[in-house]
Length: 353
Image (tube, rainbow, N blue to C red; front, side):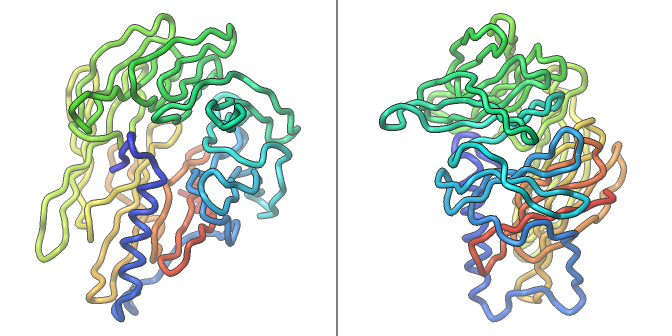
């Protein structure tokens, strides 16, 4: 699960640690019957940054960060889906967030600000023209994750809700934003709970910051989609199966009514899932760790489930993958592949989803 209080970086580090330990074994590696299908290699090595790639609005390019370590980046780049040629995007040399409002072209990012980095500047950058604009500056908090509404009218960074058009900001309880509703009127927010490591989901009105309690999956945020202004939360539960395998059961919870529906079950090597919905909410992509190291059949499989249908295998790798990131059309997925024997990420494309 993605721990919203710890963040994506530690999840990647943990997964790489598991895979790295397995690589030391003589039994590591897929068996003869396992054919890897990672897709198209776009960029062979991007360093060890842990920020997910971003599609441009027209789907012609994927923007990615090259870095030696988190918060020590070498800059932004864009790679063409058609020609696979990369270009450097003029702009800042270090950032800890990348996000795009789904209706807009500009990419929002954060930069260290202040004499000793005690603040964060939120800025936006046009990936084609290179036009750069500062939006706001906030104090560094315990969690400085950034989300932007589809129309770019609002953003939330850490526990600050900011109106981009008016420049006004409102303080929220400690927590982290997960995403804005399609019309930008609601924010799905995970509020920290004193004495508990599990945050509570709430809906926050962007008009006045009033909040509505939601039904919870009882765990950290994994993925969600919007049906109108109602968030539906993806839930993953695991139980031990035969040997060391786990059965992963996926379901979806209507966070307003509490109604649940089953999605699918998988037999996994260990109970870790990385998931994302397509922009229209009609397709769910999942990375599932499968097989066994002892029999040399271990692999990580990419599934796509469309419109409550059956899971379809669309890719397979031997290693660790970042979050599957759908193209705006929902017909392709970009992701970072992490070699279990190395410490670099390669950017791949899986078309024809």
